[in-house]
Amino acid sequence: MTGAGAGGTPGGLATPGGLAGQTVVVVGGSAGIGLETARQARAAGAELVLVARDAERLRRAADELDPRGTAAFDARDTARLERFLGELPGQVDHVMVTAGSPSYTPLAELDLTDAGRDFGGRVAMLLAVARASRGKVRAGGTLLFIGGTGGRRPAAGMAVTGALTAALPALTANLALEVAPVRVNLIAAGFVDTPLSASLLGDRLEARREELRRTLPIGRVVGPADVAALALHLMTNGAVTGATYDIDGGQHLVTH
Image (cartoon, rainbow, N blue to C red):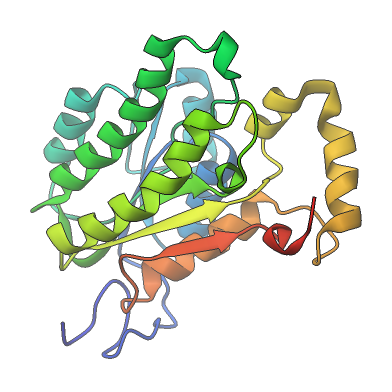
């Protein structure tokens, strides 16, 4: 594609104006990575549309960021998600999906219905976003998915999460061809210090933080702002699509 695209100049270089005049939809935009990305996108001049399941957290995010619109519903309701995106007025520039949480249930304790919902529901949600993007996200705009890296190392309790970790890069690459010239990319995050991480680890959170400070090559814990900065880069660089970008502070280099 020639000409300016997704906030870029010819050749895919980001323009100094960042996201000025563009609309960013964040599904899962009331906390953690989604909220921080919304903050950075707003600071870069974007208009926002925020979607989240928790209505109260969404209200607080809206009070802070003054979005163009909000909607409180569970993004795993794919029919509603497609309908919501399709009914947004005009075109949008970027749709980021952070909704969903990992499953760490050992096989002996695994409920197969829950496992199917965790895996199939996540894939279906991203497919729904991709299908709704046709004619809704402008050419050169972005679908940006958030996944993880943890499931790359087999371990007890990681079967569902590991399967998703393997599946999402393939899904991203295939969708990048199907919805082109809309771009599709995946951010695969390691441990990120978010409220979700805190809820999963409970009283083990500080010990995990200290372990990461001690072992990661960057010498600190990855935070939502780090992931958000990468997300904005992928929105504004019009030359990247179909790719998976790891952000884990070098955790993949460390032997456990």
